[in-house]
Image 1 (cartoon, rainbow, N blue to C red):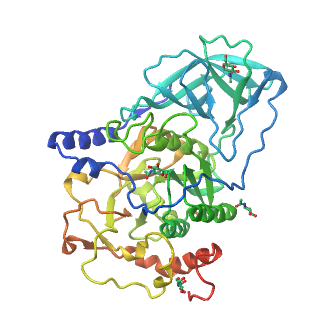
Image 2 (tube, rainbow, N blue to C red; image 1 turned 90 degrees about the vertical axis):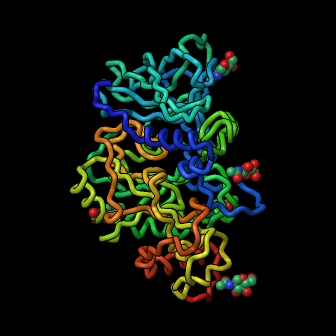
Image 3 (cartoon, protein in one colour; image 1 turned 180 degrees about the vertical axis):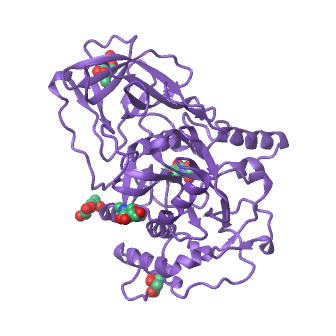
Length: 471
Ligand SMILES: *[C@@H]1O[C@H](CO)[C@@H](O)[C@H](O)[C@H]1NC(C)=O
Ligand SMILES: *[C@@H]1O[C@H](CO)[C@@H](O)[C@H](O)[C@H]1NC(C)=O
Ligand SMILES: *[C@@H]1O[C@H](CO)[C@@H](O)[C@H](O)[C@H]1NC(C)=O
Ligand SMILES: *[C@@H]1O[C@H](CO)[C@@H](O)[C@H](O)[C@H]1NC(C)=O
Ligand SMILES: *[C@@H]1O[C@H](CO)[C@@H](O)[C@H](O)[C@H]1NC(C)=O
């Protein structure tokens, strides 16, 4: 490809962390450097898939000039296109405007050991065009047998606009097959006047029951200036689903169904030997890749993080004010990396914390109250550069990964913790600490005046708080 792409070093950081932990021969460090959200509340509860999506795409007809075939429906379930004769699964397709040749990027999940010659069928304004697809398997496969890939489909001359696309195996005899096509998104570029300033990508939500922290985080996001939250949802409790429905109606949340069980067995973890499966952690990597492209021309910036993480500026109050500071300090179009600070929910604080008086009314709501966990673990050398999360200009990114970027235009930059840092309210990482070794950080309290009433309003709307309880 004709653009400058840099292989960025955070995979090396990740590998270094893995390496150290293997050498030391304990899994303790390994656990430090992986980032499985453990703040899920374990309850015996029935999990449900997303059931009530307000934004269901109605399948429409494939343009006549593209021959017989059908468009894969996008709705309440994850619908992938299977490439006949191979193990390849097509996730989504986006026009790529930033490379020298005009092409369509098909985000796919492939069996890494399988070599396939791909042909792309492009449904153009005049007729069906065919081109040779070039597959690039991402290096962040964590040794699972399946991995994320980009299949790049060059657009032949004479093809001005591509409405739909599919990829087939060049070897398969597919003359008589009825092909399944996907819509090609991002047909138009945009460099300004975005509909959203910030979109948060939550890339793997499964068995989710932590309602209180979900509502608190979604309200905090809005206070910080976030307009959209894309949630790749595998399963959740009915209560969580209800809350997500309420936020979907408000236009904040967009739920993307992400249950892969029809296609392959996703792992529940990061290591094939520990959490067997075909694909890393609930398909988080293809989700992150899809999210970058899905919001590329809708959102000025995209944050890739988890629901139990909050990136809080230290000298200004919102991300709207923070980003100009970061761009001035570190340069524009970087992946801005925020230091991970763990606020353990599993440790009692050294002294009773002074909580705003309204919070006891949340005692009946399932989940973690972030305002009750204001003590952080100290930063230690072994994990200092692990588990950071990033905010990026999505148009400067080619492929994201769990903690950062694989390929981007302009690299990345560490954000000084005195400018902004990440508050990660979850189970303890440094489990040996005594309460007096935890460090008070009350930054969150400066938001509580706005946060508490906002959370109360939503909890009431969701029927999780009695009408009469005070603000
Ligand atoms: C789905 O949401 C609509 C409102 O958008 C609501 O009226 C309906 O009862 C919901 N259905 C289910 C099954 O939850
Ligand atoms: C895949 O191959 C099978 C068997 O040859 C055929 O019946 C089916 O229609 C094909 N599916 C697609 C999407 O091409
Ligand atoms: C985006 O931020 C600008 C200020 O920088 C603000 O005027 C605008 O309303 C924001 N857009 C949205 C959708 O919130
Ligand atoms: C999620 O729930 C399913 C079904 O109850 C269970 O099989 C699975 O182990 C759970 N996953 C995690 C990570 O807890
Ligand atoms: C919590 O639940 C109990 C028992 O159902 C109820 O009496 C109490 O009013 C509830 N508290 C709040 C703040 O909703």
